[in-house]
Amino acid sequence: MRVKVDEDLPSAAVRLLRARGYNAEGVVDEGMGGWKDPAVWQAIQAEQRFLITADKGFGDIRRYPPGTHPGILLLRPDEDGIRPVVELLDYLLTAYNLSKLSATVTVVTPRGIRIRRA
Image (cartoon, rainbow, N blue to C red; front, side, top):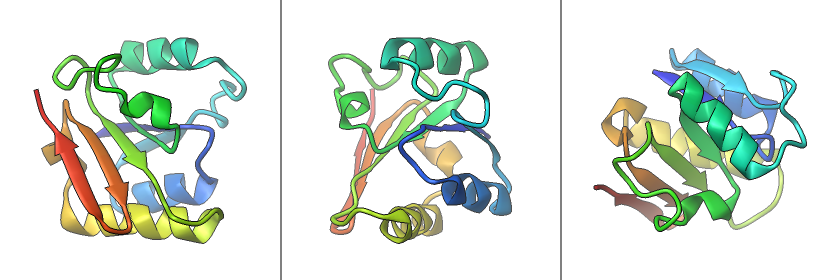
């Protein structure tokens, strides 16, 4: 599965995804750091990649309705820092193969996983 990791997540997230066998690319690594959300979204859609982000704007199902894109995973840790984000992503990847979340908007917190489907 092709995944794009937003600039608000650490490069450790990209490494974890690659270690789990995903074709993961980081927004910053591709020179898109600092781009506005609409431009990043357009590039992600052109590449047909699943987005992993901590930007809660991408969790708005009115703007990004499930079923209209390859998928969005929103990580919402309780603390700032690299470790909480990577642990949350690892928690999700242990519970789900990302392909099962295709075309959804999924929100992951330390308390659980919420999946919005079309």
